[in-house]
Image 1 (cartoon, rainbow, N blue to C red):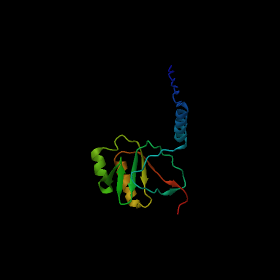
Image 2 (image 1 turned 90 degrees about the vertical axis):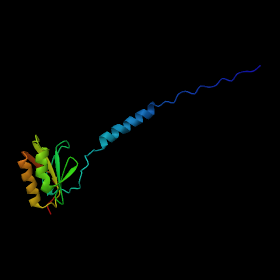
Image 3 (image 1 turned 120 degrees about the vertical axis):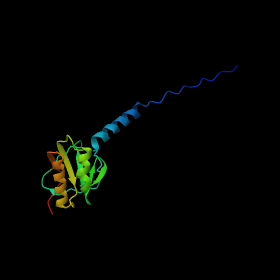
Image 4 (image 1 turned 135 degrees about the vertical axis):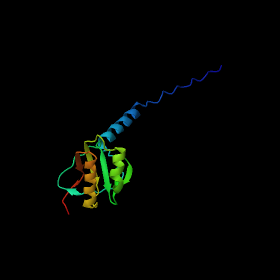
Length: 135
């Protein structure tokens, strides 16, 4: 007489603890991490005694050394900036603009950029600086 061996059924793996750990890690990194938009150019802002509060969603214009203006990931020569922006109407309808200028940019270049932005119709301009003592 042959007896058939009963095969044991292995219970399915319990993945609920794994799912719990994954969600806990997700929540931890969302709370602990700080996401910041990457700057298209390397800019070292000038030093100021006041703290800036700039929302990441605001329109930002970068002025780097060598007279380069960066807007929306595109680089423009500062001499061609006004003509290009007037033609393309990039700043049309923008009431507040944040400028991130490198501290080594000559004052004349920065003032020329401010005048161009004013002529393009932007009324409210903010310069990003870093907190510290002036050198």
